[in-house]
Image: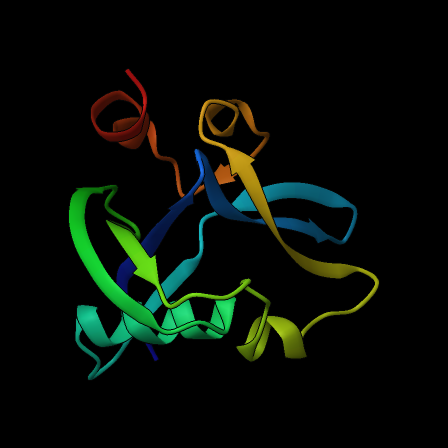
Length: 132
């Protein structure tokens, strides 16, 4: 069972951030890597689990950036992953079908705020942490 907290990992490399391009039942949108905190799980455990599930790379370091929202309550972290090219794993890989796609993509930081349907909403990220 999930709590009402969501961990969100911001992974940056060469001026780009890692996002998940989603196509689900005819809808296109984008999400930051991350997900819900499970009952009995700490925020840090959830961040490590989610980064591994969604990138197949271990989380080396993380720095808290900010929090936003109420339902769910989103906690944003700048994350450093082990070296290697991220690839989808975990439940997201297992759930892949022609109507439910998760595609990891590197997106220029300056382009990310204008992506359609980027979730979770991250206006504080752009204004306070990543864009001038």
